[in-house]
Image (tube, rainbow, N blue to C red; front, side, top):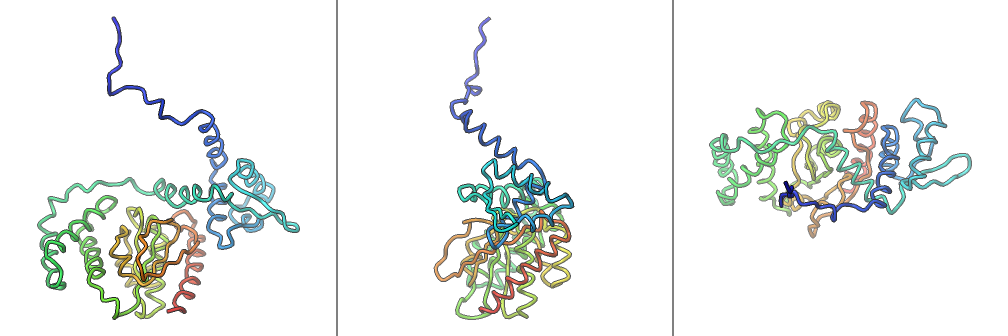
Length: 322
């Protein structure tokens, strides 16, 4: 009996990566296959100087300095890092040609790998009546906006949050808050009112949330800060949530991961990116900054506190310019 291969099982090996390239990639990934090495890479990547000394990296672990140097040598031999000796210390930086790949690994892949599984937007039809009611109430607040546009924003807000939400019972009130923000963005008169700052990171579960809370607390209402994520997580990191509650209890109400929208960017006077790459649309008249700060979602409780202090210094400098 002759066996035949079904059409839908036709081999696709012609599209697979070649063996030499696969071997090189596997060796590079193997050089990173250690938690301490990943943390070192993260520390070097987020250092404002663009490099880190062995003496700085020793603080990441209780292991000896020779062990630290060994891990760094493995990554250097793999081509991930470059090194330079200055006096008695050696400084390490990410190899320039690999920096985009390292940024993607640390700021996109890592948060996705450690976050909760993505949810689908099931159940939208079951709550459509509630969403329609919310849209009607918001229409009274924004009479100049088309009713169908408002309903679309409310439904889209719910669906965008439902894809990753971990607590479905909170979806309706969170979707209403998110829709209110979006409609406020659409209706904003840029010639009046407080200045607005939008903080954008990948997961919107850590640094961007902390930055927004710090601005709202330290500006005393002089500046309105919001945050968003290019690929939002299911919830804010627990350590970050507790810090936000300490910084500004009012901000903790809106401390939930939200997807980035073009309207949020258009409504902002300043957009601050925090490790999310070139995901923000470039809008004329909007000022852009990029802050190199660590990711609290991948840090210890002590590390989160240090990241908060680092962000606070950035915030103070920003507020001084407004």
